[in-house]
Length: 303
Ligand code: KMH
Ligand code: ZN
Image (cartoon, rainbow, N blue to C red; front, side, top):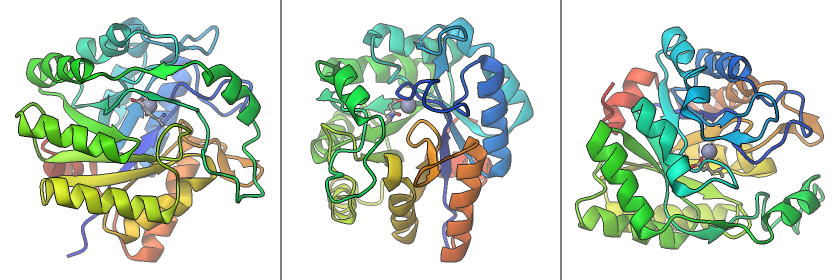
């Protein structure tokens, strides 16, 4: 039987700004509505950040999260996945606060400290230059995305042991897979693992078919049958790499956190629009879409 594809929708993130798209959800109401609509369109997992409703800046405040989380839980059966990546000026402690407060079924866990360029890295072959590349480059020039071994361990202790939360392991490079294997060996990270290959961030591995194959081969070697993978491609790489992931038996992540566009020069009007578009691709590939219940069963979530 063909394994259903788990669609994750990352609804708003912390990288894009309200000036870049009028469709980026900012207020708690907008985030709730976008998430519910994405779930109705077929997303089994909702990857969520919060933003200050006044400024649109990423917010770590659990009170802001609690203005949309209950509404989403009430209106959908989708798995709630709270980001611990947060946004640029936050400390690691701040980044954990909301997940520690809400005890979700899933939270992100970023697998290494890195430079983080906020836009597709190796786009030099493309005639589609990312329109905000200069602004992103300036903003991230001296930014270190801190995820030390200690941070990863603390996260597992507080959220995994403390709340039964399981993780979306965000891997931006091959080394991150080896780091995860280290935590598996120590009994800290526990199968079944859900790996998110994050391709195309400047500072991480590039977004092309060869790197996806390399990530997959390496994960096969390190984790055998103990893992499932999903792929996010940044910007214009979103659909091609998600398609390739699905064709390889993997899962997909879409959403305005990773890409504001529907196609070259055309902004996506909603997260749901991106979910519907990848659904069409999956249908063409003959891959069914996983329900939240199927995602829970496969990923060992607490429900
Ligand atoms: N914006 C993605 C490339 C997180 O929230 O933990 C990375 C991300 C991090 O989703
Ligand atoms: Zn995120």
